Length: 198
Length: 75
Image (cartoon, rainbow over all chains, first blue to last red; front, side):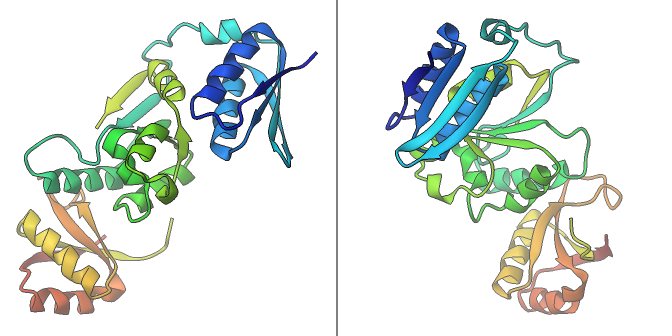
């Protein structure tokens, strides 16, 4: 018996929460979503929890067939936090400026310089998370877009806070990265070996 | 990335760098404000990177806009 989670029309992060709850009770769950962002977020959560996901597009929604593989969800979720040496390097960008000061212009010069330099130094972060006004850096016309594209091509994951994009009404203008939610953002930060904040 | 050849124009202050970027963009010359490369200076500073092919046109624009240039390096 396959459990069906109808997450159509629900705002982020509801589809992820409902699917996660369903997976705690059943090994096979089909989540129905109606947009690509929900599809990506549910898929990522499920895959991180050790599930296989098969997407099927139908007229009335995207059906995500999720099957738990050998790994139990509880084990994955309650994994111990990796040690500093073991976890990935995560960069968080909480503002469109680097640092704080009375002159935003300087903060913008610095942030531009930082992302340019990031392409030339080691180590590369595994993930960069943009939130609060930091999301202004991932939209069309952003002065660091070209640098972010270069980093993305080299395999850096770029997560962007969906709440923040919505708040600034920038969802349509997003030019790079994946829209993410607080669950993924919090987990990515907590599981990091090191979090560097701009 | 790309096989474009670049040069950097070093200027005397951050505000000159910003002005240089502004007037170059207005003139349709592609440029980028970047930190001064480590091998050119150990001090914290920004400079304007342009494509070498645009160098003469860029000088012209900057002279007209009275942006004082310190020196130019190929990178």
